[in-house]
Length: 242
Image (cartoon, rainbow, N blue to C red; front, side, top):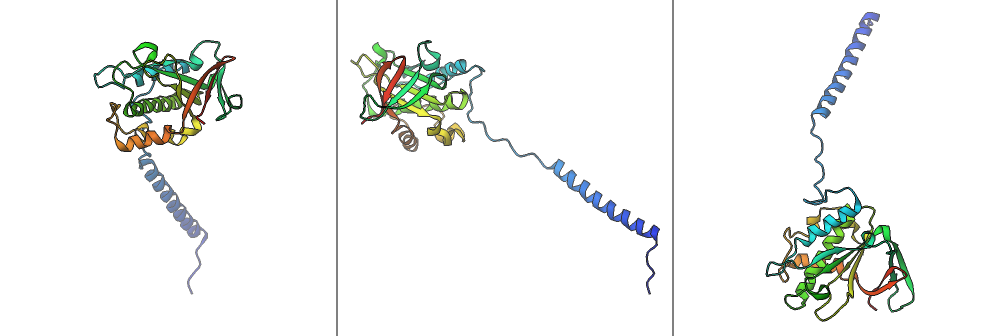
């Protein structure tokens, strides 16, 4: 019959087992330490505003985006002016009316969470002096408005709403057409890099936008067109088409 292990022998075996367990644990720790950390996600955009204050960031965004869009002549397509919470102290916010009901309030947005941009051509009353209005030019203007909204919602907290005025056609003296975006409208596109939404790194000339990108612009702006009705009690009033 085999003899049982003595006390000393049992302790020796226990220490051997314990040493093996500790050795395995240390080996696993070394593997974990040596394993490279996961790569950080790609930046949302290659450019971002340098300022820390929201108002300054919005101005940086306006200047950056405006400088990217050109006419065929090489002149700027439009300047981008900033209003909203960066405008006068009388501005109180934005009111959206129900379609076809001029007195029916649908939604109201506070001034601190709303930014307005005005796409202003170099002609009289902000009109674009070169060429004639066209569908191609309108598509590029909508792309510019979309880019402004995406940059603003990504980098200009606590802004949740962006209103963009389009330049009036030649001969008209006032702004009429706008695009209005909320954070919810573009939330899925804020979770992925900008170039996934707008792949053309260089802003396209009118008529030169890639068909696939044009489809994206049409999808994201097609139902965001509103008519500007004026100002009531220091609120900007807009309404979707009937």
